[in-house]
Image (cartoon, rainbow, N blue to C red; front, top):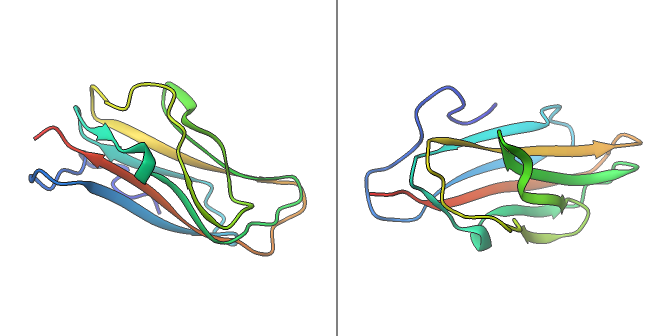
Amino acid sequence: MPLNANTTARDAGFQNVQYYRKRIQFSDGVLTWKFKIPAGAIILAPLSGVDVQTVFNAGTNNRVQIGDASNASKYGLNVSLAALGFAPMAVAVGHKVTVDTDIVFAVDNSGTAATTGDAELVLAYIPAN
């Protein structure tokens, strides 16, 4: 289930790093998660990405795209689910959002159905407060 998909952007009201974290597994059936961050927030790319605990083994693709409504891979193109460990998002654009923004993690597992896979999606940001 998406976190805060139909609510206002999450801001604890304090000057601290805030984050979303969502566990995903190969058997979830859900392929897209949205995390809404507030206007003025700065995404902390080195702390945001995917932490793979058990590799995904779909036949062709085992990856995640990280983006927003303007570009599905704006913050991460083909982030691997096929290797253990933390894979940070690769941001080649600005880290600051100007309006409340849904950051979208879209899993791309294709080919033969996966039989393994366990990971955590992480989005860390600092709100403008």
